[in-house]
Amino acid sequence: MFYTGRQQPPGIVGFAAVLKSADRADSNSAVREDVWVRLPPAAPLGSPVDCRASPPDPTSCVDPQGLGPQYAYLLGIYLGDGMLTLAPRNVWRLRLFLDLKYPKIIIRTKGAIADVGLRSAGESPKSGCVEVYSHWKHWICLFPQHGHGPKHLRRIRLDHWQEDLVTRHPGQFLAGLIHSDGCRCINRVKTYQYIRYFFSNRSADIRDLFVAACDSVGVSTRRNNRYDVSVARRESVAILDRMIGPKA
Image 1 (cartoon, rainbow, N blue to C red):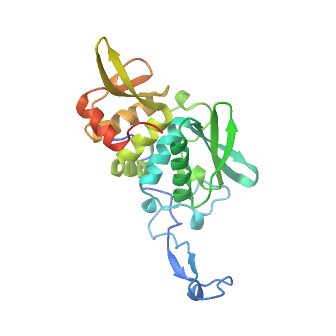
Image 2 (cartoon, one colour):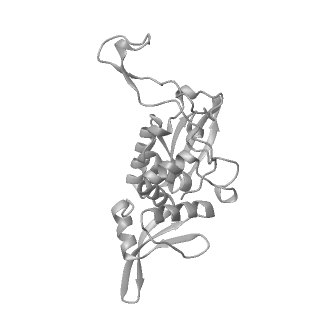
Image 3 (cartoon, one colour):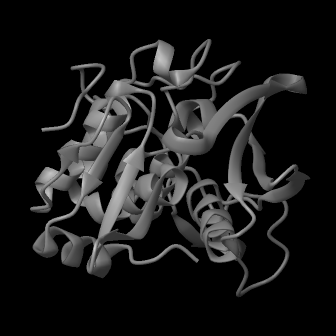
């Protein structure tokens, strides 16, 4: 069972991938046939609206039922190496700091942003890493874990709808966590060597989320020290190898 921050039903509703022929859509921009536009449906009856953008706009917010494995991966990346900052006009900047040594992870993260937010991601070079960023009013709705101060100095809990997504896509969530704050390495003991995974995070809550996701897929974990969790049993390493594999 994953942690949950609120017990009420999911509260982010509104925008879903509903396509309609432009010549039939109620839009002045529909100028010819065979053009398809994305229409935000009305909020479902009985669903509480909890858009965190300022000002709130539920009709262009996010329907958690339309999210899938890409969001679970992006959530793992965000919990490890991400943050939100407020930009002008109440637009939020999603900022993910990724190691330049792993270009495929950078590409995968940008693809997840495009899939989840339906917008492109930019890159800003930093010392030893790259900041992958994207601007949107509703990033604050997708990452309610945002708050003042470092994550390890405050409580981190998943909302109910996030918990459901992680339960459905634990492999993608684990991949995001490993790709941000984990590694796959070879441990050598005298003449014997074996592969193991490490996950390191100063937040006890985020480490607990990693352990819970591992438990859900049959992966055995061990607390190495105050901040590190390892996966070393052969069967468990094989499961993570099928889901994640070496970073690239």
